[in-house]
Amino acid sequence: MPERTNEAPIMFSPALRLKMSDPILPIFIKVRNYLHFDRSRDVFDVIYHLGEVDFVPSHSFMPFISYDIVSKQWDKEKKCKDDKVRTVCYASHRDSAIYQYYSQVLSENYERLIERYGCKGAIAYRPLGLTNIDFALEAFNEIKKMGACVVHALDLKDFFGSLDHKILKERWALVLNDKSALPEDHYAVFRSLTNYASLSRDDVFNVLGYGKRKQKNIHNRICSIEEFKIKAKGRSCIKVNRSGKGIVQGSPISAVLSNVYMIEFDRRMENFCIDRGAYYRRYSDDIMIVCNHKDESDIYEKLSLEVAAHKIMLHPNKCKKINIEPGEILKNPVQYLGFIFDGRKILIRSSSIARYWRKMKFAVRRRKMCAKHSSIKGGSGEIFRKSLFKKYTRFGRKENFPHYVESAQEKIHEQGISKQIRKQEKILRKFLSETY
Image (cartoon, rainbow, N blue to C red; front, side, top):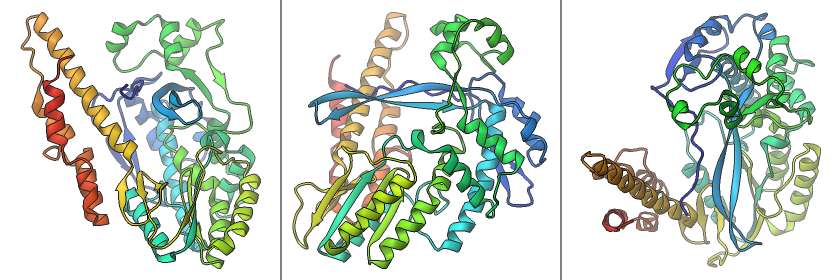
């Protein structure tokens, strides 16, 4: 089965980047054209007031609109494929501009603080100019350098959904120059992200009576929030988070807040590991620890204490412990950021390669179905092979998967990486020759 994804908001034109003059740093606001309860041009109603202290506290934040991304994942316990559902929310255009502004302000303060701490453990969502290829290579080189060691590849369960609001508020204040309380404007943003209101996109269209055809013909905005509230009167569509934990996943500020929340966790764990000659890195909810056998129990005990103190949880089915011996080929390789290391070779994870073939096959199938319907209606019935080759082979654009594989091979210097998809053109032609 191909990966199923409920489509995100359609972008009707490229994002517009606006540079604002700010006393702290240059701020860039991206203006995108997706459907919400306001228009993309409404951004300009708020964008030039973002530096004003009194503006954000009096601003009325709109509910987030949510949709589910559904993908197939192999369940080892059930021994079958199961649906993995991830709920993503997106803010209104005006709210998004506010979140982008405060995201960049927080990011700048965060970078200053971790530079003062001397920390290198947090590597995700930061302006380091590096990719997951660089981070994975660094981790595997540390394993090689250490020789006989223990690797803990850990995963945090429901990371964004389990961030405690009280701790987040304390860390937010810490990042803002050790202030004891949040300023009014920052507190307003904090409240909108913790006690957030959200609406399912399907519920929105059901309340308004918009079918599939009507949805495709909507321009500028879905409707005003006032109009929606009138039509939704008597229905409990809007859900408010009052659990005391969790932030929305998908807002422009969510990524920065995850690092802000974990700043003390990273500092304590990194210092504890460095004192024992161990290696610590965290990429969002993925943690990698490489240590000697004699220090393993102390480090894991410290990790457990910090996990409990920060009210987060390790995922029991996704945490792996691997014992490394020099020259030994591992039966269960170390997996990290889309790559595997078996003790000798570094390769791209097989599930990533399988997903690439699956997407290629699904795209060909979809093209053939569209061509068939086109020919029935008197169209050309053309499949447009050239665009498929551009998207799924090395002859295409630089952002596609084969170019990512080439980049990985150049950085890692492992010939086996390019061999993983060496038959890309042959397989694409095979899919094109098949009948559906």
